[in-house]
Length: 180
Ligand SMILES: Cc1cc2nc3c(=O)[nH]c(=O)nc-3n(C[C@H](O)[C@H](O)[C@H](O)COP(=O)(O)O)c2cc1C
Image (cartoon, rainbow, N blue to C red; front, side):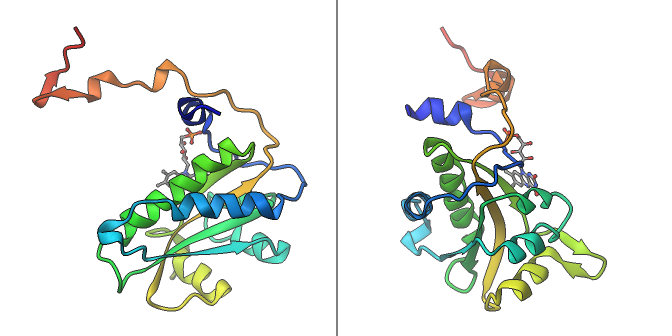
């Protein structure tokens, strides 16, 4: 699939078919993550692939907005070693987006579940909840989870409506870009 077609077709898919994603495709998703750039090439990430149904069910309760994980075939939990990089958020975000885009190219659907800075409920962060469930060491921060599977919903590709040209300036903030 051509790169811009992948970009247009990338939508957040939150309902999935009851169908296993072959291991080769899971491997491809992780290869996409490992192809990410990272600051000083520190590569601070660690990815946890979860396909255990009980754990997926529990992850779907990590916070409001994670419910789609209940039908996902798998989840990739995106973590990074905070002690290795002061910009682990950026590094991990890029890796997560690589997975999100690679899923489209492989005929899969996926969605981003924000974990960092979100609450599980009163008194417990979503990050603490996920950390406990998956035995994640203290120095690894949990950025997000990418839920993956074969789509059970059809969303149209993005079109011209996303092109917010008014959010582009030329040479100084607020100066409209001249397209010629
Ligand atoms: C940083 C970030 C956090 C997000 N968190 C969630 C989330 O917790 N749950 C969810 O269902 N979608 C989440 N999304 C997906 C957005 O809701 C989605 O990308 C947006 O509505 C645009 O729709 P589209 O992805 O189909 O283009 C998140 C996306 C980003 C980039």
